[in-house]
Image (cartoon, rainbow, N blue to C red; front, side, top):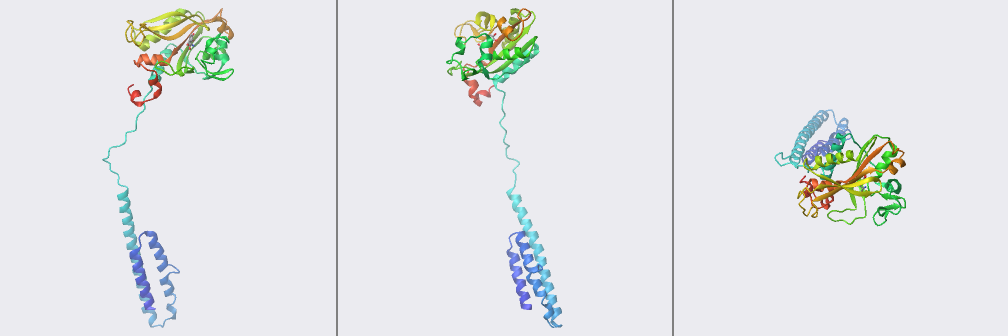
Length: 339
Ligand code: DAH
C-alpha cells in the first residue's frame, strides 16, 4: 500500500506541476483529494492493515495529503498571478497616444439663414407654422384662385401623385390651410420644401425651399407689406440694402408685385451675379385677393391682408455670396465647413 501511496504522490506532483490554469487545478484536487479521489480510496483500506502497520501508513498518507494540498495552494497563487500579469499586459492603455477627435457637424448655411429669418419675424410678432408637402390641387391651386388652365398646374411643371394630389409647387397652400382654421388677426410665416419639374443648374433645382408670409387684419395695406419686407431685407443684407417693388401678376393677390434688391455684388452697376441688371429678384408678394379671403370665410369688406413667398436658396446664396445653388445640396463638408 505504501507503493500505491507513493505512486499517487508522484502522479499528483507531476500533474500539478503541469497544470496550466486554476480550473485544471480544481479537477486535479477532486481527482486526488476528493471524496472519491485516489488518496481517499486508499485511506478507506487502512482498516485492512495490521495494527503495527496502520499508524505508519496512516501517517504517510496524511503527509502526502498535506503535501498535495500545499502544492495545490502554491500552484493556484502562481497561476492566478500569471493570469493577472498576462491580462495587464494585454489591456495596457497608452495614455500618451493622441485621442480621436469626434468630427463636429455644423449648422447648414440654409438653416442659419432660416433661423435668422424666423428671428426677424418672431420679433415682429409672427408665428411659424408648417403645412404638408404632399398637397391637394385644391389647396395648392384652386383655392388660390388658380384655375384649371393656369400653366402652374401643367403636368410638365408639376409632380402629380394622383389627379388631385401634387407635391406642392409653392408654400402658398399653407395660407389657405391657416386661414380656414384661424380667424384674423393672422400673422404667420411658413417655411418648407416645394417641388417643380426643373432641370438642375446653378440657379434651379426640382426641390427647393420657400418661406411664405401672411398677414390678415383690419386695415392692412401695401404700406405694411413694403415696410415688413424692407425690414427683412435690411436685417439680412445690411442697413444700406435697397428694395424695389415691380408690378407683377399672381392669381391670389391684387395688386401683386415682385421685389428686387440692389445687387449686393455690384451695387447696381451690373455684373455676373445680377446678370447685368443691377437688381436681383428675390420674391413675389401682394395684397391677398378678396376671392381668396371670402373662400376661407374671411369677410374682405372687413379684413385685408398681404402675403409673400421668398426663395430660401436665393437669400442664402446672396447672404454668403455663393454662386451655385448645387453647392447647397451636395453636402460636401469642404464647402459646408466654411460657414
Ligand atoms: N407662390 C409664389 C411663387 O411660388 C410666390 C408668392 C407670390 C407668394 C405672391 C405669395 C404671394 O404669398 O402673395 O412664386
